[in-house]
Length: 217
Image (cartoon, rainbow, N blue to C red; front, side, top):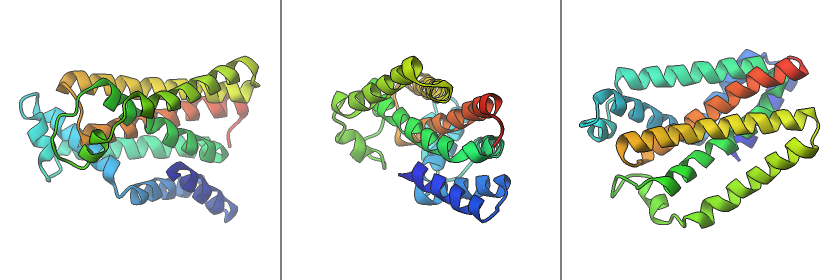
């Protein structure tokens, strides 16, 4: 839904002759507005927590003040996403939808693999109503089947989409594993961080692959 709205905004602005640079910034801003900044807030809190060290990690995540590590993480993600979208050009809408879908697989993987570290928090409701394999196995199975079909019978473009999806999913899984093992589980903040990095790596891999194989947009 969110990726679709971002893609729609990109198409509308492009039809009004907005530059790729302007489109990139506007769709990033729209994504933050639609989510209430929840995911990037989790990204910043996670960065601050990791910078505080193992013993004070969760305490630092709870602190409402934003530290230098959080600001740096946000700046890095915005620059990476904007640069990728500018490079993608007319491929931007496709990549936005892919990134939104793949990024949202990360919290599901985190819920399936690791315990939840807090009793409360904004993600506690979702964790309490987590249905395990009923929630994530159908989604993962569908993605795997689509990728397998694209690799076997699809043309070059479908194979490129499949490759970008594999890279994005792999990156999201890696972040889930690294954070989960470092902290001994996950929180709502780390769910958001995993989602954002999954989106970002998907956009970057698309920016590297699509223009190289199919021409700049």
